[in-house]
Length: 155
Length: 270
Image (cartoon, rainbow over all chains, first blue to last red; front, top):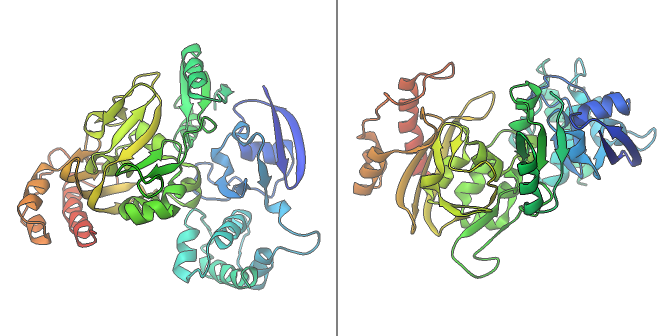
């Protein structure tokens, strides 16, 4: 057991955790933030993507202990109260989801992609999201949503 | 995952002490292979030693310091950092391109060059670059030439308590990498790195195809030394008897891919 001190969505948490706990399990089980999903559990599907110190990572492939001292943002932390993040709004407007299971990870990956890259082409977006799998194959509207959000976020 | 202890040393000496103190300690770099391995209970180290805070990440060399004529990349530098480094893009664009083709964005954000070459997966991309570019691998104990470092599938010359600190790439005249990636994993079914350096001369290194991991292709090197063009590759017979055969591709198909990827690499060489 080790002490973990971590900031999640702006709030500091200090917990005793087992050394082999994955970040995604800490987020879901200890903090009860269940918006971050476990899909494949083999670092392929991207349903578990969160930001650790501003970088998108697959939280099923990182120990919570590795994120000690870090600032983590999950899907629950991106809206401003009742006002959705532009990326969430764009997924809503463009119907960028079908079953919705992949959506939290898609949104978190897309936010980092748009924040770090200007003038993204459709191809750039498709390649940038290759770590996120939508099992409903709803990629077309997802890409449209990211394009819509990019034009708002980079205005 | 089995129970384990996690430790975060502050420097390389502490990391080595932690390794010595553990019964079966494992060094944790980006974790992109090790953590999935632990999750599948394929390994049960009693201690994980995280190398992220011992100062092993960063890119330097000619153009930054003005001294020396190569590129030095710290072992804990992530694929994303190599991909986006203006310095690598300018000096060794084949390497930044290679880094940008590994896994996916989130894997590149965590995975490291040191972790990749310490694991020496037979389908990893970096081993081909290091071998073709005649890179040198510096550890806490010594400096090794890439030729002596990669010793077989998932095997390296590293001792149990040896930690890679940095990789040095010599001055490069020409370099290019072409990969036929597995559509699911992005690992190389076949990757071909062609390079001309002062230190190593003309080299062709192949990953993803060899039964013993990365290797230099002597016949292609000889053919390209005679005539540095696509026709020389076309005229070279690619032997398949020592190539891997698995669910992804037969040895025969991999031999075909070696030829095709060599041509693509050569056509894009700069």
